[in-house]
Length: 393
Image (cartoon, rainbow, N blue to C red; front, side, top):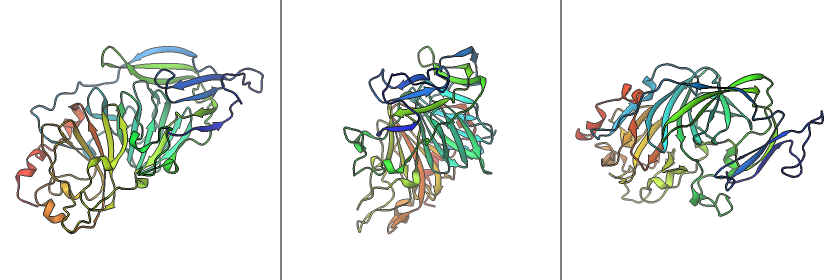
């Protein structure tokens, strides 16, 4: 994270005695990235964060992904996925490679306590609301929010309100951060960035929960690229942190606070970037004024990003370039490297003279090919690949 925060009670100096009212020491936990060489935070626990009473294997059901072969563009309708549950074990895995996994979840019940020990997570809220409890404190999220959850943070998601919680999740094998070009050498957002520190939210006070023999499900690395699960039982509830400080913590940014970068002619996807991860980027397309050159064609030109697979999640408004393709609210398109893609037939002509686009979409570009998971294939619109071979709608 680009700036320092302090929440709750902490001592004047790091790694010094900090005592409870009964005279015992609080247990200090340094949570840091890249082997003590990058961002970190210090957390102060009422109990030992190392005290577990059991460790058992957990085996959630899973199916191995398959290659996008024969190669073609794909369209998946996430709103046709069945089975609401919780926001962790209810995730439907859709696309994956060695760097990230993209999932969709429908949640109407609280999740268990969970820790992803493989990498950071980016959770985008398509609809609904939730109270997210973490070892750093709690934070509320709602439609349009991105929640960046640092690797190995213990948390759970509690849906609130009457609407189903729908989330798009990008699980990374590393860390998810703002793009480096938006930040100074000291980590401050620069003037050309489309968002800044004022737009971010994070836990404001400690969350203290009592309890003993508390289960936490941990997703962690196995042999090679294998993913394993373990259930730890902690002697005391892990939400026992009385204070923390540092630059590593969960944070939220709303897509509605993204200030779009526009120009006289069509702006390329890097102008829409919001985050970066290992071998992938996340961009968003928001309502905005569009190109104002007198001869401008506002929709994208046909393009082929030869190094990337492109994933688009359509989550609001009217995405003009895809009209006539079957794309709808909650759709995900996959345009793989090796396929030149662009606006649907008729879209360039229709867009001429437009001065505003009312669209909302999240894009993930990966630099390694994505494979297809079974839930995606279950809700695929198999007609999508041929929609460019039709007369204009």
